[in-house]
Amino acid sequence: MVPKLPPSALDLEAVAKKAIEDMPPATRFGPEDAAVIAEHREVLAGLKEAFVRGFYDTLFAHPPTAAVFKEGERPVREGTLAFFYDRVLEGPHDQAFLTWLAYVGPVHVVRGVSNPMMLAMVGYLVNFVAEHAHDLPQGPRLTAAFVRLGATLGAIISYGYEAAWRKALENVVGIPEALAQRAALEEAQRLFPLRGQA
Ligand code: HEM
Image (cartoon, rainbow, N blue to C red; front, side):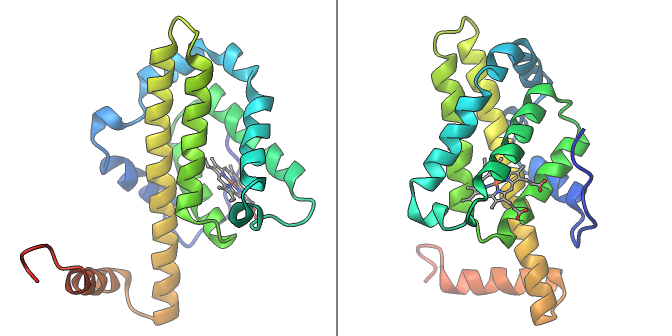
C-alpha cells in the first residue's frame, strides 16, 4: 500500500507515465529488478536503520540541506523515509507506487528542496546499496537493479518537480501550460543558441 494521495492540481499518474516513457527501456526499473530486490529483501531490511541514519546524517551535515528542516522534524522524516524504504523492498512496484513517486516530487518543491538535493540523495541510495552488495554473490545484479531504480526515481521525481513548477507558473502568470512551454522553449533557444547558430 502507498499513502492515500490528497487531491492534486497535477495528473500524477500521467506525470509518472510520461517520465518513464522518456527513458530508454533498458534504463527503466523493471520486473527483473523487482525480483532481485525480493531475493535480497531480508538482507536489505537489516540495513534499513543504517540507510535512514546515513541519509539524514548526510543532509544535516550540509548547511543548505539542513536548512530545509524545521526544529525537531528529524524523527518524523526518518519515519517517512523508513516507510519509503520498506515500500521499495516489499513492492508491488505498480502504477500506484509510481504515481506516489510523482507526488513525492511536488512535496519537496513546496519545502524548497532543489532537484540537485534530490538527485544527490538518489545517488546516496544507489551508492549505499552498491557498497553493501559488494560481498554478496548476486551483488552486481542487486546494484544494477538499484541503478535502474535510482534512474526511474530521479526521472519521476524531477519530472514531477518540473510539472509542479510549470503548473504554479501557469496559475501565477495566467498563460496556458502548452503556450508557456512553447514560449519558454523559443526563449531558451534565443538565450542559449546552439554552437554555429549564434
Ligand atoms: C532520494 C531522495 C528522497 C526521497 C526518496 C524522499 C522521500 C520522501 C518521502 C516519501 C516523503 C513523504 C511524502 C509523503 O508525504 O507521502 C518525504 C518528505 C519530505 N522530505 Fe524527502 N526524500 C528525498 C530527498 C529529500 C531531501 C534531499 C530533502 C531535504 C534536503 C528532503 C526533505 C523532505 C521534507 C522536508 C519532507 C516533508 C514534506 C512535508 O512537509 O510534508 N527529502 N520525502
